[in-house]
Image (cartoon, rainbow, N blue to C red; front, side):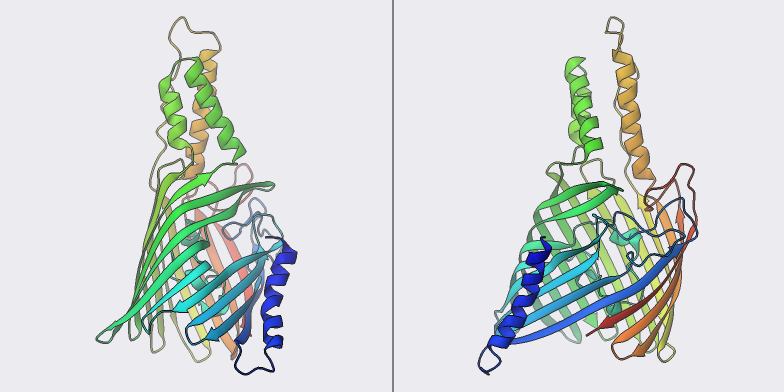
Length: 420
């Protein structure tokens, strides 16, 4: 989004507030915000540690951009049943700068005491903390576990959602259904960005709360498209050309199978939260499935902490494992009588498909984290966290890994989260 447009959108609620300052019957406007000021460093220069969708990350030289952000939100209440919310967010993104984005921009109608409808841009409800994943102050961990939160690069949905709340005895049940579409930028290299598009999104989010216990179930389905990956498009075009030219129909079928164009994708997750006395537990488990070269995966994490007054030490373990494998159907050689270039071409194509398969398998990793949160102010908290990241078959989720890179890698970060 153009940064001037972003600034204008954030300024509009302020202008509305001023215009109605003398009219007590007009809309009311509330301005709030949040942010994180952080430093992140690792013990290696052979690869970079980053959050999902970032183009670069931290190495032995500490960086502020990995875990820092700033958000501003305006809530406009027009009348008892109609309101609007706009939220802007500045953070490091796929273009490797502090890009400004319009995270939320929706109108909300309260149809009844139990049912409400929103139209516009909302958070995509695929995780337990989808709505506040970037609001560090609302979370115990310094950052959401990458093993889980990297599996869906789509953060928002443009469309409509409905939320229904009801009580079952002492249990509060909230059901949310969202329909729409979205786009996201994903960095695939230091100067390479692809645009991921999700069409026909259907997302269901069900949350049950009973005292200190929260249980969540989520399911999202979409048709996924990635059109501008140069390396993948080159490989798929070569497979189709060889399939047509040498009359190997399985090569055309393989290209169609691997390509990400209106391919079905789903993400199913369950979550558990416990905030009882001084004990805090949070966990999620998820399965991703796609009908393309993007791997199916299993991801999960568990975090536990214990409060000592204003201090909350915690431990977390997270895991990501690819589940599917690329079925390389490229023939090993050409039959007798084919042109001399045929077999070398097939070998090059097979190597390309194998490289894709290897890249998918390299994403497997786990992370052990220890940290402490200190609520030193009623609207600010200091966090210190140390992660031991263990890629299993290569670079894991690290960026720009050099030849021969192997884990584990230690990541240290200190952050001040604040709200205003």
